[in-house]
Amino acid sequence: LQLASTKDSVDITTNKASKHQDIPVSKPSSLPSRSHKYDSDSDREERRKREKYERKKYSKHKEMVTEELAPKSTGREATIEKKREKSATLHGAARQKEDAKDGLDLSEDFLMGGVDDYHARVQRRKVAQNKRQEEKHQRISAAQEAEAARMQKFLSDMGIQPGQQERITIAPRE
Image (cartoon, rainbow, N blue to C red; front, side, top):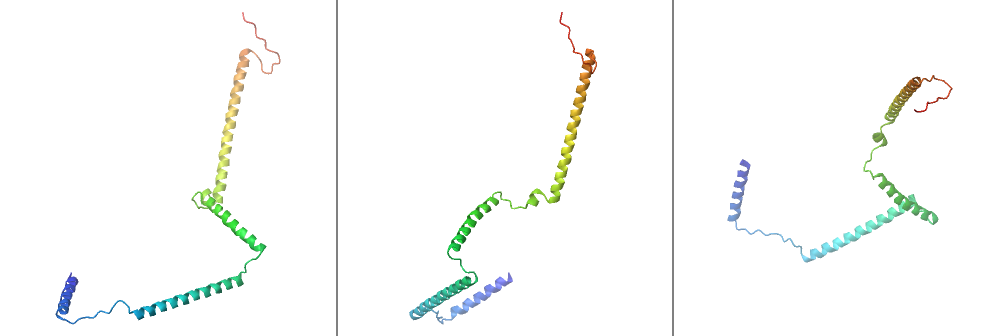
């Protein structure tokens, strides 16, 4: 607050002093003279030509160095190389598109578990399968035993001895 009031007081005193002075202040013209304008245009054009020449010179030098380091293939080799490049871009794009189809770029270990996790899961699956198989065999054997007991009871009710070889005859109805 004190700083603002000090600034205001300085501003007021400065403006009072300039009002009392009738000294005209000449402002420099912002527009350049015509001769200066033509000079700056020619300088600008000269600089543009020089930069263009430097770029062209650099480009030729770069092309020459590239040709010396890795010469271009010619003839049949050139056509084969062009075909390979085109094929790589086409098939590479398809491969990248296929890879990015799911939107997830995660490793197989992260998604499916590491090698240790895999072996542990396989072992657990085998144990579970064995347990289910054992339970199934127990149910089957229990059912077979129950069936054998029912058959034995039926045969004893009918008066047939186990292992009897004679044919059973049923009396006709009255």
